[in-house]
Structures are given as structure tokens and as C-alpha cells.
Image 1 (tube, rainbow, N blue to C red):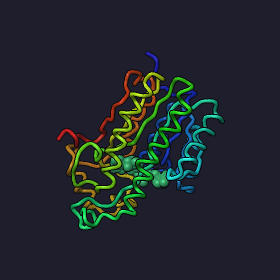
Image 2: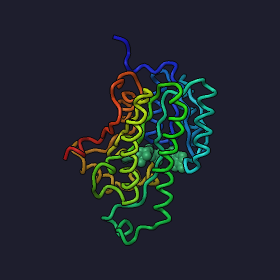
Image 3: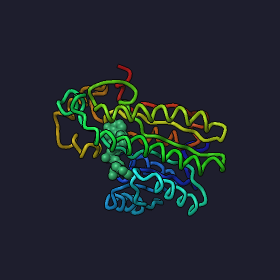
Image 4: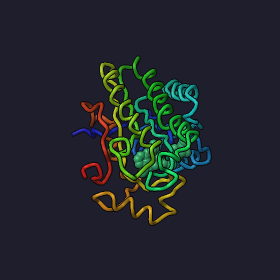
Length: 262
Ligand SMILES: NC(=O)c1ccc[n+]([C@@H]2O[C@H](COP(=O)([O-])OP(=O)(O)OC[C@H]3O[C@@H](n4cnc5c(N)ncnc54)[C@H](O)[C@@H]3O)[C@@H](O)[C@H]2O)c1
């Protein structure tokens, strides 16, 4: 049987690729033969990410991008497509935490800071939409493509894992996945989401690395009773980016140690 997950010759663009889940997804694509364009606001992080892949003999390049600038998103996606003559996979992944859940005073409804709210919406929601929009502009005329959105189980259900702002943006992007999947299906563009549970990354300033009690609480909240390693997103990302998911669109798949089954 041919390798359904083979990405040889494909070009992938990943926002927020310098760290955590974005890096792991990009690495998975490169390991299966894709050329990866990392886009991230963190220039030194980008350099490290590209270096890690190229030193391993994989194909990668980096572009500094703040997803709060939709015109720059369009520009970087279009220039990646023009440079490589194709763009097969776009991952709208860049995202930030919106502050603590309501189990902490700062996260209670009367204390939510609206300036923070706006900033999180610009990155997690408008930034994701603008990335999907720029991807669709390139992919529609080609009649093929994969758009993957990093959602969250916080957008699928309530809980005290994350704050109002974050949960609101993640619920919004789940709906964007559904809408875009329906519009873009006739163009052979598959749009799907990954909905991670708690992964040990640098999100929220690396809070889970610094606060073992919080990490233990999060781990206890999932049936597998542990946090996930970023590499544990790779299998699902590869599925959604490759021919292995040729009849799969409009889904948001939890990778959450069983949390949403509870
Ligand atoms: N870690 C988790 O438990 C978890 C769970 C569910 C969903 N997610 C989602 O996964 C995605 C990746 O987060 P992560 O956990 O890997 O965190 P991370 O902090 O390790 O990585 C996020 C990356 O996004 C980049 N970034 C932040 N703001 C940006 C901006 N304005 N423009 C461009 N890049 C920007 C950062 O520089 C960083 O490289 C986010 O959308 C997050 O909401 C994470």
C-alpha cells in the first residue's frame, strides 16, 4: 500500500510555528517530505525552529509574522505560494491564552479586562480567520488544499481550564471551520480543526512548566491523567494534511486524553 501520509513535494505554511504545537505539526509535515514555511512573531524562536529542521536534513524556512496584521498574513501566504509555485497546507495555529479561568479571581466575569479581550480576539479569532481567508484565496484557483485550524477543547465545552476570552475565541474558530469547510468543499479544499486538551507548551508564558500544582490539576482533569507532549499532535496533524483524510472535512477532532468524553 502506498504511504497515505506522504507529503513529498508539498508546501506547508504554519502560523505560530516557532514553538509548541505549531512546531510539532510543522516538524511532522517536514518529516513526511514537505517544505515548511514557519510564520511567527518570535524572530529568535523562528531561527531556532528552522535550524532544528534544516540541521536534521529537512526543508524549512521562516518568516516573521504578527497575525494581528491581516495584510501581512496575506502577503506572506501569497509570497510563499509564489516562491514555491504551490501551497498545499496552511495551519492557522498562532494563539495565546486569555488569562486565568473563573476559578481564579482575575478570571471572574466582573474582572475581565476588555483590552486583553480585544487583543486575544485579534490573535486567536481575527488572525485565524485572516489566515484561512488568505489560504482560500490561493487554494481556490488551484482546486485543492488543506486548511487546519488549531482550536481547543475549551471551544467545545465549558470548564475551569481556561478563561472567558480564550474559550470565546476557540468556540468561534470551531464554527469558522464548519462554515469554510462547506463553502470550500466544491473546490476540493478540506478544512478541519484539531482540538487539543492540555499540552505542555509555552502557552501562558510557560505557566504549566513553572507551576507544578496547576500542571497536576490539569493532568487530573483528563482520563489519561497526564499532560500531552507536543509531539502527540503529530499523528492527527499528518492525518489532516495528507491523502489519508481525503473524505474528511468540516470536523474538529479532540486530541485530549479523553477529556471531552467525560
Ligand atoms: N497548549 C495547550 O494546552 C493548548 C490546548 C488547546 C489549544 N492550544 C492552542 O494551540 C495553539 C498553539 O499554542 P501552544 O500551546 O503551542 O503555545 P506556544 O506558546 O508554545 O506557541 C504559540 C506560538 O504562537 C506564536 N505567536 C503568539 N502570538 C503571535 C502573533 N501575534 N503572531 C504570530 N505568532 C504568534 C508564539 O510566538 C509561539 O511561537 C494556540 O492556538 C493555542 O490556543 C494549546
